[in-house]
Length: 281
Image (cartoon, rainbow, N blue to C red; front, side, top):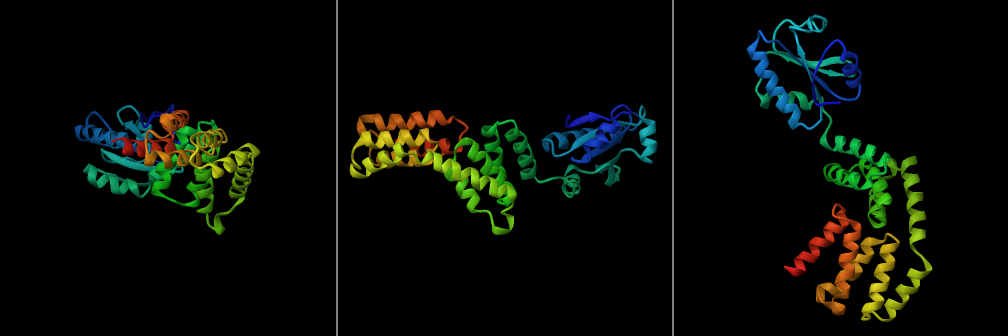
């Protein structure tokens, strides 16, 4: 639904239904009241700045008199805050933008909650890459189990097993519900699948020959293929810190290939890309 729209008899039920899940601000105005017209522009600007935290439904009282009468509008402009189908707050007359925001904040969801809700929709559509970006922002603001579990789910979809395990470990006993248990089981299966005999053999070979560039590269590639990307990148980054041209440049090349495979929007790739830039510049 649009952030700003005109309320009419035809769409009023749709708007009331929307208010069951999202705050709706009703702005009553009329051409005969220039003050209400200009104030409507202020509310429109606030609605656009708040990026979907509420719906602004403008009511032209010259046209929609029945709606104005239903809400018993006596003065213009009048602003009502609608939630769960009924008015919960409001005011008559004009206010400064700085005075409107505190009034709205009492009823609006936090930014992290919006990000979490949008991420859930993205995950339902298997778009974990876009969801990860939103969930990181949400988790930075609110490190609750509610956010951590969805963030963990996205990390599992992305193959971020280390990150997923860390997020699960942050969840307290009281919040270890059915969703937590499901994610824990998924993580256990993913870790088991990632710990292949081939990787164990390559790890043994690298431990015997820690200065062998090819042994390191083989192990890093195998870890990457098993979605153990943080381990792979950290393994390669150790010799790069000593010499960016280690292994005749082949180690750096593999490092860059893994970053490219993870993609521009991947948080882990961005983290290690920054680390590499620090070494280079």
